[in-house]
Length: 179
Length: 264
Image (cartoon, rainbow over all chains, first blue to last red; front, side, top):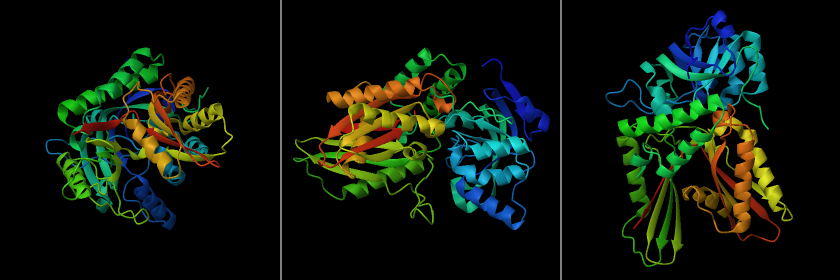
């Protein structure tokens, strides 16, 4: 699409506010991956008052568990998983400064409410385009929960990964326009 | 079989996405469908997995009564699956216990279904079935007085409610009848049918077209972000059932329907 917005992480409040549901975005910079178990662990650490293994302020979490490393590739196929499984764990992370999430599919209303309250945006990456999306990942390293394999927390550097703003920081959503 | 399957979309699947892309009128939806087509080309060219969720290995076998199998068939299948997932650098997505969640690290066990049939053919059907769309699949136990239209409406409404979670545009298999064992198994097996192929049971075929038409009118669109393309194909079929029952099983697959059929 011609009118793509190029943005870089960590996200500033100004960037967050400039995004609207339906925008096509090319996302660059550092993001962290976390799936179900990693979310559970992050929530437990926050509840205990311990420091999470990744920074949250202004950061973006990508709901993704990649294929194993393939020789000659920085990152093997790496597309989004279903976001709603992470809903229960998301408000606590937003409260601690998380500014964006990348996944696929609808979010619960209480997640949208927390996004509006704390100022965060939800990006939809296209599920089932993992080979295409992996081309935007320029570096990758495990930073925590290594024993979980594909479900570990990875630090990724992105170079113009194509995503859509599914839900913006005003709570406007592309989902739910059902006929 | 599974090595190739995870890298190359079946031609009927690729072509039906391509036609949908040509027809789609929404801008975001068109971009997504184009990404799906580009992804298929990159995956095939570079030997990369189409989706990082390389699935549970689902295998249906139809063994003709005249076919003699020497050795342990399940073991042979599982050896092949394990080799494909290791050689392909595919994600191992199976855990040994659903509650302690420890990965088996070889994508086993596979989900194997063997049916004895007449004749001397041996048919192996394999599918790499992702978790997101499997979570959207379901079984209904409806009242036996439920009408054809009510069956179609129930299925369609719930699939619309699922929205973008199962990676639409979807492929859907619907089995009407059978029991709690047969219905979901047959519904999933319908996903092996070629796009455009009917069951021949007029009632099932009408339900299939109605569900497809209703989904594509829903506005859910690719990835739930809006559009004309929510469903690429629905296959339905019927099985006999108990007088008190009307089971309906719905097997949902994302747009990346990775399956192959080999007849020996």
